[in-house]
Image (spheres, rainbow, N blue to C red):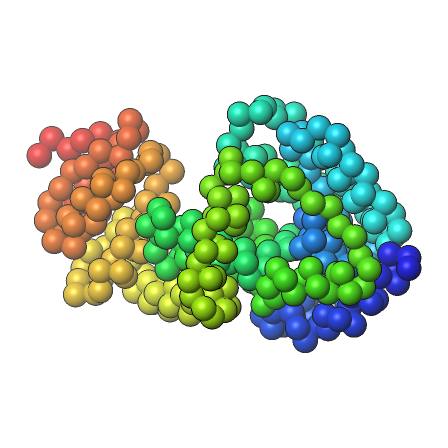
Length: 337
């Protein structure tokens, strides 16, 4: 089959109704000429995403911008991935943009590689006037992310990732329609339509935390659960997103930040700790001069805010968090009293 025939076959196996309903609702509301960017590595998930977008939204084909990033960490295999992706896009008649990591090095961390990739996405989207980035994350990615973030003590906001629709910096939106499908669902649908994909051999190595979760922890967790643990994690993610949205709406209603970017403690009096915590996070994000605050430092500042007592705490070399007169302020110099 040609790639266009393969896309049609895959769309029959995974109809539009099988995609995340929030994404379908959003996509159907968008202007017809809007450009959509698609992250495409050549792997099963991103290939499935691209083919379904091409098949289920035929009116959008001329406005698809397919983005491929070569981390330059896998030599000839990575170059073969790029060639594969370019051929698929040429066969589908969609725009293909390839980028590569000029600062690549063998000792690069998973976080550094991800940052370089998303920096390329952001720059290309600005140049191509695309606000939405479609990503091929599926249910197994939800379970992996949840296990990783549990290890570092994330709250509801962190555990609710990855979301089907997630606002990003610069007004960008990350769109993930495959979160209702499992990894095996994707592979089975591709195989049933005779669709080949690229395998990244480095995913089997234990160099990165996600790879260790994927290769060792998640399979053992599934066996121990004796049920569909991945579906359970996806359900928990949905519920955590609801809780996170509710807490954000509560903070919105309280309007704890003043016009001068101060935190009005009187508006938070008697409110649950979770609401005060989120309000404090918002206050910190509103202070451009504030440096990084450790977890212990944040908890100490949160305790002072909850108590409403006068306090002065360093926020790095640029200033201080000061509680005085039922207000939390950012000051560049420590107060004398």
